[in-house]
Length: 278
Image 1 (spheres, rainbow, N blue to C red):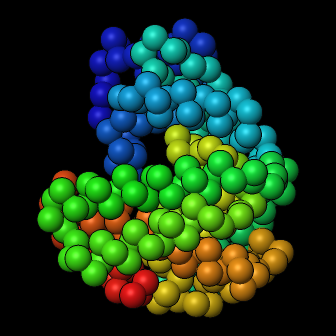
Image 2 (image 1 turned 45 degrees about the vertical axis):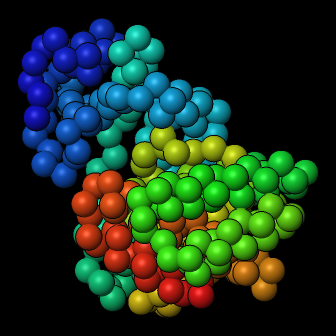
């Protein structure tokens, strides 16, 4: 935890809200800092390493987050030169720490569905085909990385290639998507909040369900039911097939990232999803 007054996160907060103190919060990753001002208001300051992610999160907060209808922090200030954001802090329990099988966990999925539906409804559009080609190209890029690392058999390479071809020719609805929508980015308690907007962009609407589908709901289908009850509708048969096809991106990404980071759990997840596609 940084207490350095020269830290750009501290400097931005000091310039905007006055004197601040650092509040210890071991739950936050190193690039985030919890701060309190002289009257007890709390903030989270975040510094990005990558300009692309910073720009993407700025756009999210200045353009799209309002469609979450209060279920997100507010952007207080930013400093482009240091890629730093100052956000209002949200208090509560992280969604990933809720007891498995508890009513609180089920309620969190219901609330998550309701919040995401508001974002999707407000930004919905019909793709003209470019999005399908973009996603197929993205999948082919991950396939190439996995192939170079020796992570795919010949049969697996052909399977993923067929799915990429299928995606390229599949019409799909688009919406602004969070794209890392899962419990570690949810805060529960007196109100439900979503955090971490750095991946937010326009994408295939059903792809916003993919991480929950492949990382959470397989072992707990009642949470899928709770989510879509909150969302207000379930995927159609066509949309469910498209969601399954997006498992190819999930699998290839997990295999490559697991290999790069020596993350055996992530690699195992990629293998599990890949076997489901066969």
